[in-house]
Length: 511
Image (cartoon, rainbow, N blue to C red; front, side):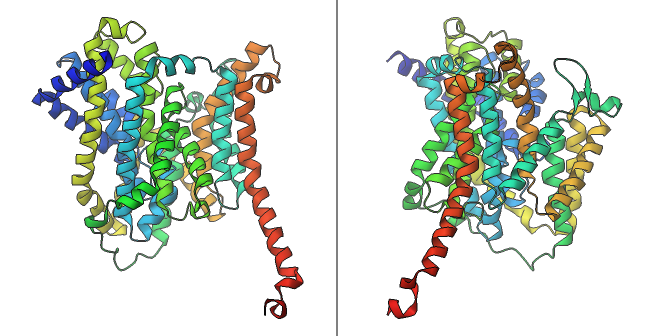
């Protein structure tokens, strides 16, 4: 009852403040803009807008930052569906089914599924934030370096295994991604690795130049060599949202994926990429149409978007209750809270309970604003498909260059992005998927740091990954994710051959 009364009071206060509602709507619109623009991330958006919150009261400032965070996670699906270019790293998995649906003339339907799933994921994580935040945050602290390393490895094996019929190439891509992630100074010894005596490579290859180079540039180069169709199929907003029966058919997938995203968000440093990968893998396994995943089915879009938006509330749980940021965006939020005189941690609810419940209420209102901005804005978002390709590709290329340069004001990042873009285009010509490389770049630093930390704690004993129950279970799941799809495919092929060779399959016997 105490929780209900505190939450209802915070909601009434937020709803009675028109200026606060305008700031929440503004934050969601800015978040959509940053999420929908490749090269502009949620982390960058929060970082750039923190100075603008200095004159604002603490509750309004934090509310706008939370709204920006939620909006950017939902906005990443827009270019992923329309252009096959993920707006954020968390939206990489959305491209697997979102863009194939758009190519079939189902862009509005794919976006409708993404929008509803984003809202559902945000609401599930919001419920977790309201009800079980302290307990879940304490449980996350029980995980050690071995479990973190095993989870990072699980993410890589999942993306390798979901590449249809190309597990070996998927593993090769993940290894290439890990190789790119270790460029720079060793975090422990301080020695340079693969720097070629180049000062610019000492700080390593940042995630966003790699992401833009491997995913955006190859797509633009392919578009220049492909013939453009006479026109896109007409998109009717009337069919944007699924019917009630369709939505009920995806209800289990939605809730399961949102819960996975929430749990992953609670664990510091994992983030939406891991959450969407695991949710997509589970959806593919439990869906009767799992063989169609990757070819343009709603279930893949639902799993990815529900999970990466579920991360938002999950990542706020350790931030507010323990003072530990769950991802890079909440790390920025931690700085914003401290600037406004708040110290996240166990005493935050006691010292600034009204502010905390205001944050929780703001997240609920932000999800409502996401629905409004998503529905109203789609008729403008979809116009990008009407732009001639010879005009769209150069504009996106300029945007990619500007976005990459703005990350650290370094032209070397642009050079890295272009080199990786050409490399990614050559890989696509060789039918080697680039998604595992991207995941390797994202999860490689986490895998390396946690493996070395676990070995330091265990005195160099590699069996610590098998003797700790949590890491052993995760590694077993990773091995199963890697082996079982190929094994089942071979058994199915062998069964088909036996049926074809069986005398009972001849026309005489069938008659």
